[in-house]
Image (cartoon, rainbow, N blue to C red; front, side, top):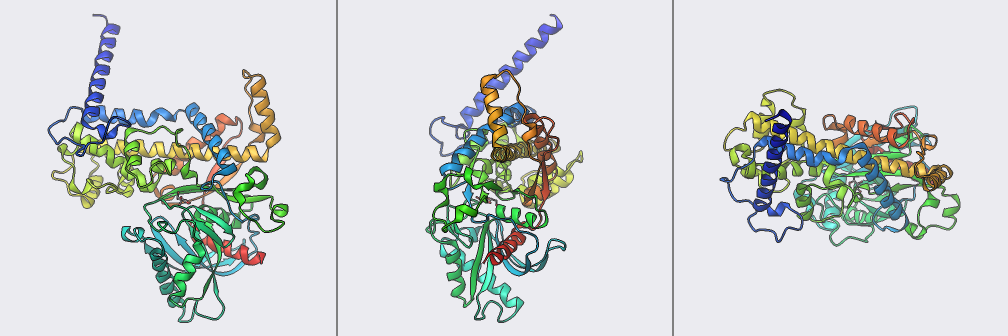
Length: 539
Ligand code: GLC
């Protein structure tokens, strides 16, 4: 037989094996497939049915996660997401939410302010001293409380009572009478959830993600009031001076030191972007009731985009994403978030592990008991394994065995499989995030250079064969970014930056490195303090 013929036959055999393997998986694990009948009570059949090699399984995982990551596909997805942004800018009540912050800090604001930060996994109370742009902001004191699952399950006012007890403890540490005087102590709150802002210091609760139950029974109620009432029960005399979403806090904290800042990004437990955006490009109905004359002076306003809610129907999902989404407390609520953030990366990897144990003998075909529960594989493990570049992966093995009990020690092949899965899952996350950021950047370009954009659109319509570049209209931006994943996940930020460079070079040739990710550490507490300072200065 000739060599090319052997090759073709070999390919056909491989293809046939893959099809058989995929069919077997579909029969064994119907719960992993969208729309294939009802869910089985017992989705997995036990340990005797192991047909695939780990190698062929990981190849499939790699392919499924990598297919959407070509530059042209990502550009196409970015455009589709931009269409979603535009649509929601006109009328969505839960995303592209305009705040009341129109002007950015001048950098001359000074003073010491109390800042609260409700993040996805910590609650912090801090005293922040602003010394003006020339000097560093100072964290005079900070106390941190872990938000464990029992706190996340607190409903309605119970959660605010829990917050008030943390504030109480911190204030007592500062001084016995601090926060109990006749004059109410102004506080700024950074809130890592959507909020329907009704003034600079108030807003209505919107459904919260990240496993929090606090919005059960409080949706539509005034957030500041809920917290102040809980503080009153403890005789604390505090007054809400500013409420900001954590993405807006990041923007404010960076704008305080760099006046050119227009965009910010959070990637931790959740994800989001805030953007300083022209008011006239936002639907009037989105502003609710504004004070008289507000529209005369407000040229730009900070928007909390709730970017996590975008990408549905645009960003391809694998069967594991699909299981995660269908079994989620709020299916389809935050499609982008479910595929890229610290709360979910570990769970995606766990779902792949579960299938690999069942069908490809991972861990000798035995899933550790502790990994059976959803969300039992922490993203910190995924990050650890990805960072381990040794051939033996022995430190990964030790780390894994500290967190989970394995009937038999995982083999090197098991660990290599895991490392590859972690790399593939996190690379897609960085790429999807870059797609969202690129889309937001294009939205800002389009709003700030409307003439050029419409000329470009017209030219494209009239002569679709002509390649119209928007390079002259592109804006160089630095994006203030913060959050555990973007700060700490090994290589994540660089990978995301790489994708951003590719995307901007493709959509705006000659624009160079037009989008740059810049760290904005401690942005939630610093930004909340800046928000209070700006509010006080405007009074
Ligand atoms: C979630 C929240 C959003 C927050 C983001 C980052 O997606 O909905 O409000 O800004 O996480 O913490």
